[in-house]
Image (cartoon, rainbow, N blue to C red; front, side, top):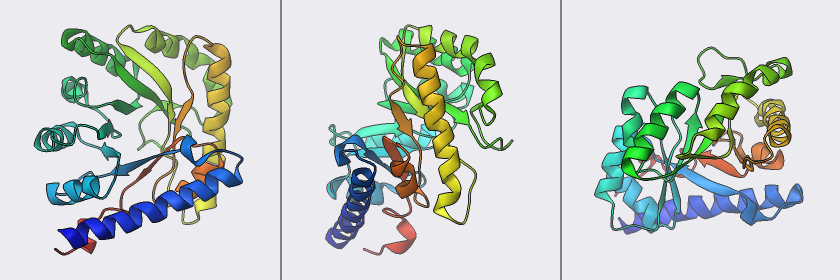
Length: 243
């Protein structure tokens, strides 16, 4: 177990160094970017080792799996748990009260359902609005690849922002996969422009967070303004470790 913790710590610190260099190169402080370590499908042993290695924020894709891990690792109360995957309506009740932030709010229907569950639980849930800037049918999120689509979204987004038990904190996207990290940069740039557009349209709202970038392109994401990057296999992958 000690070797496992040490290996993850080395990968975690190396990734933080790369993020810091990318942040400085774009004129920002390294502290402006949070590293979410994605532990979806990883066994509890790996997740526990990641926490002991110093990981501060964990990202899960599936509510039931995430809640099981949260309940099994309650002694690590300082760790933040983020839900980063698509949330089905029938699983929405699992998010409030368990996760510190939802990255993937992708519809008014889901927002209303979450708002009701938050009210019942007596909690307020911080959320990010997910946008599909690549136009892929397989991806979730409000379609925003064409800037002519932005204005028609305002009424629905305004209704989400007005919900009393959700707190919008920013935007998230998952661009199309490309073989070159620079392939993602135009999509990151588009989300940044959308952030600026929505900040002007909804001055009462907080849209300061930008969750974008994964193991394959997080350095480019940071250079384009990401405040959160979601990295899994570069840091934790059970197939690479033996104990």
